[in-house]
Image (cartoon, rainbow, N blue to C red):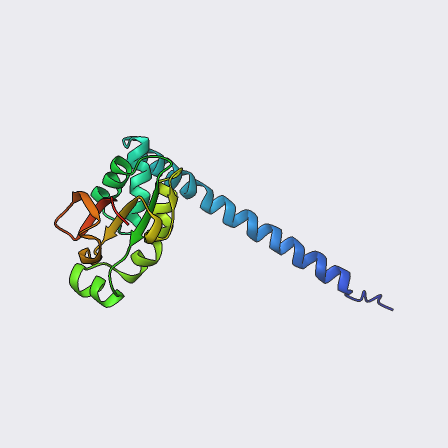
Length: 161
């Protein structure tokens, strides 16, 4: 008489676990050299940039122009208050200035981070306004524009309330 061994659930779990570990080891072995090469390439790609350029490059990935970021860092003093003034609508931004809607979403958050320790506040109490394709008419009489470019971006110091 032949002795037949029954396959138990514990045996199946062991084999399944062993297959998972082997699969992970194979994937790691195949992918690790590529990941190290990618990391080395990224390191070398960023090594020629200064720390400020690396910071501004992050803003560029959000499609925020470098000159606008540089001007904000230059003209908005640390520990001051500022407000970001967006375009009147996403349609105006897209059609009139070529600004994607995702840039409008990221703009305020990025400028808040970039200009630390300055604080982003409501426009009515801000010392500086960062106009990103905004309507400057409401601000014309009470703001001295200290930087402008040809793309509809401007930075102003609010002089009167």
